[in-house]
Length: 189
Image (tube, rainbow, N blue to C red; front, side, top):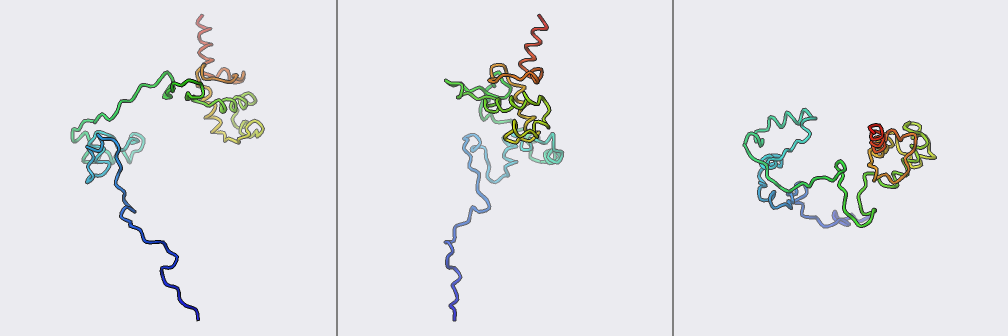
């Protein structure tokens, strides 16, 4: 007859599972750590520091109702916001900071040079017809979707003159922001 196996053969050792369901927050900032109360919820702690927990409350109506009904909101307590850090002003680009570097490759560009070459090739052939651009697998060899190509082209159109590293196709020159500025300057003169 066969011998029955014991119940625990081949299993690993049982582990201590104290933090299986809850791991206390690891707070690195000294100011936040000093004002954090572990007995309160994260929403209450953030409200006590003057921070908004439901940032999309203007969009999401459920979040707005929950924020209005919250009894410990910062407005009700009269708490003031704590200054955590200074936010530097962005450079001349909209929300894209130029990083100082010795070479061009060390700077951050809104659209990479490879993406500029790719979207330039697609725009030169199809103009702003993104559906036919999507269907053409010779120029769109990465097989980007119509919406992805539209977003890439929109970012390409908004490039400043010093960020454009490829030749601008004639079919879309009128859509480029840097070309429109040049055209307006010529019309004023």
